[in-house]
Image (tube, rainbow, N blue to C red; front, side, top):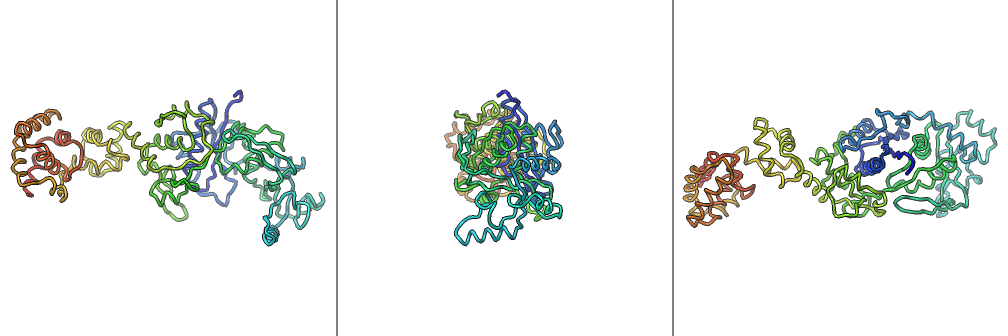
Length: 505
């Protein structure tokens, strides 16, 4: 690749960024970094009716949280700004005029009512209405292909609404190349004359997209599969301007967990997993959609599982740092077929990253989210976290897994008592207290050696001691190794809890 690689992620600020959008941004970022290129963020806000306040900030915050920041974009000006399409409005008219001059586009004055009537007339005959070579110069359609120059000028001067349509070529075969899907052949007779520009001075997505990619020196357009039907038009626009087109790659869809249909917010709501990177509060309804960040996912885990939605390194390795992903990423290893979203696999990734975090990092999260720990020594919390983190997938599970390290059981699980507490248990627990009083609790080994030595010497049977002991310490038959518990809470606290259980029985 001789050219300096430039890619762009171009979302519309019409709501929160879906994880499908984050995946598109990620693949652009990986490709750019792999080739020493530039990752551009461009905000495609030509559709002002659907513009949502806060959506642009959400997009940049989401990319920053995922640690895939853009090199150029709003607030990070390079040589190709501005990076919001609404601020580039003045640029597009000259390119439309150029297309009209070169007979590659034309004015159309058809009203919405007239087009609706055409649609209905076609439907009545069992046909689909397409505005193209079939009918653009005949019948009831009103455009500059059938009107004189004077009539066109008069209509525009009178302030009549118009659109500018692309003049799709007739009887041509278009060969398109996609870096993921290979060669695609299109019969141009099947294409409609897409609207490029409206009389309010705003371009449609198609025109703005192509002009901006050209002016920003974009070399590769990596985008979602939903844009594949637009590829022919975009290639034809490049041809019409006489510009070299970028290379195109269309990423596979992210599918529902069932594998049927595109993943949506509704799937997340129904099955209880996020589909957005960060919490999103809908400004019109004030309803909150939970994000991956607030659900306790680590950004590295999110990036890792997103990379595997549609891409495969061709090896058995599954855990990749961002730098390793950059190193390994190749567009040729992106699948054509849709990628099934697996909520359990996303949790698996988070669990793996949980284990990579230091106990100090995790204990800070734990303390910050658990009021009961505000007065507890952070070093003690870190020791607890180190013991329980392998049992957890999210930090929100920590309290449920470790509460007994911070407070004595207030009740004992009935089923556990039934199983653990027998007629001889009280006597054995009383003896155990005496043994613990003599034990050295400065190390786990010291406690373990003393207690196990006593059990073995007296041929008591481990279950008779360990089960009621666990119930006394935890309140149930669960938790980490009992000797780890005694070591951390201290033998005097352990003895106190055993005594409490004995008093209950």
